[in-house]
Image 1: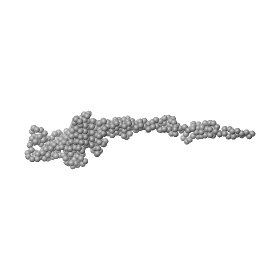
Image 2: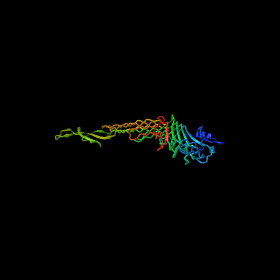
Image 3: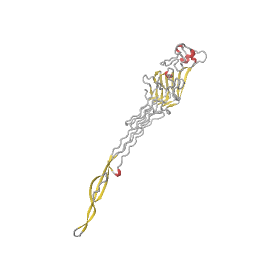
Image 4: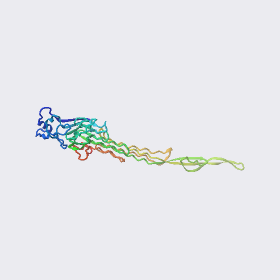
Length: 404
């Protein structure tokens, strides 16, 4: 993860602490009155710009009671700034979002505002509400790329805290890209959905997403639907004819063949005949017989071709692809042994082309198959209810996909 945290903090190690310096550092003004009552730690989560904010590192500043200016001789935090650079994706770990902005975990994923590590106040090993849930201002600069690589439902960037977030400003001058939706490959099945770009946290106060010129929050495109499977060709019939002959009687037909009738032809044998007076001659005694035998049987039409695969949608590290061409059907079955068609079967039809993958923030292309194309991911998902994060700088160039 390419993220670094800068702390805006102040302390005075020696000497008196001038009120003018407190005014400059914490009021962030060069003139005006400094009131002791305003130098207590402010824990109100509705305060957008507390003078002395509530931070896990500011617990030495009291919230009320006796005021001791010497407390400011210990570092006191005014705000945090986290800077994301480079590329953060889940290519090597499909079980997480591309860029995690919640508490830092044992794998180093998250933002460690206070620097205490996994067991510190801003680590997953602590049950303490970290700085994300306090009113200290937290500015996150997305300057690099956050991407969802795997088609696993994980967003490209996510807060994911279970408690309310307060005073978080997310400045996006870099890129947040959701993962692609995979094209359909199973006949009559559904294609994959595109991935969400940015998931925001739970309801809180004073939380802002500001998309700068050139910044991008783009949801992944849905996968194209697989094309329809074509119809099989119609079946037909074949007719085999066998001519049989025999001298002296009907020849009969082979098994499975039907006779068209026996007919007599020319003589095929003679015998000697003599009378009482001893005169002899030869006469026809047997005749050729002919029989036309036929057999009719079914033959199959060709199988219909499968539909072409759907194209993949736009996504981090991938560009949308077109659906593939449908598969040709197979040829009709031929007659056996040189027979002829009595009713002609037909070849299988060609399968339908697969749908094209969806562009950023758009559904994949559909077909007439019973399945469905992949849906587009969402650009920004805010927690239901008050939807505490306001969004500015969004237009057709900076945001592709819907904001929920």
